[in-house]
Image (tube, rainbow, N blue to C red):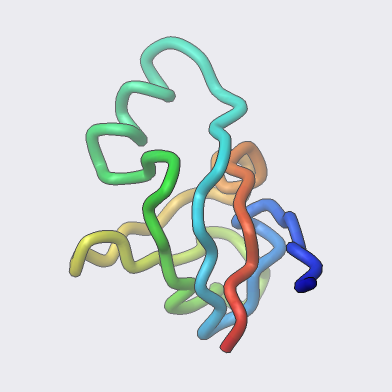
Length: 82
């Protein structure tokens, strides 16, 4: 039986793949991220973190999208095995 590691997107390191499970957002920001492809069940990849850790670039549906740490800290998911 495998242990599932739950992390927030902001905790991922370059190359990590994370399956989104929850968005802890409401209103306009939640709608914006859903429209960009950050939907539960979708796998996103951490592409690059800036030197100070903000913003962070993610690959979602063959598109690279940068999110502020504040936003990525509110998206929870399962860390996928390499």
